[in-house]
Length: 210
Image (tube, rainbow, N blue to C red; front, side, top):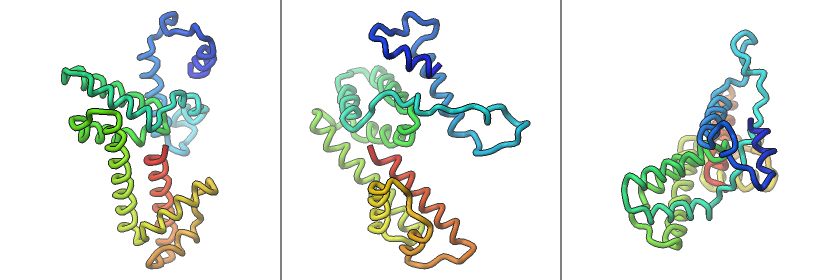
């Protein structure tokens, strides 16, 4: 269905009105598709499920460009809705956009938090941009601080590893991570520490970078 939709969208007169499935139904299926992809174990016995034979084409779900400016426009649009019911309905619609894209799902909770905490004070697009930038920076800083404290590594070193990722497009090697630790882990704990820090870095990159 994703492949067919991608082909149909190349035609300017494409519309869900001509199909036997509504756009909302399609989005619901797509959201479920991503749910299955995210929860599917890396490997499973052959007799457990045929899902291991499914070729998940996740790139086909990445269609809409949702970036900083797009988020600001959506949030500012909420300020023009007078009724609480209408506003909550629109917020739900905005958050659904994040359910339909694997790369954006990890940002969803923060977007929701930003809307809940800042919407009453926003009046203009400039207000929204400034508030969002401050909110995003603070959340990122707090996340880095939590990782640094729990793994006994400085925030500056975590920032260095993230910057190196953007330069090389590769997560740091195990020895590189270990060399930056304040206290060297025991041999049996070493790989677990490496995996946790590498996973934390990957999560920070996926959540906070656009």
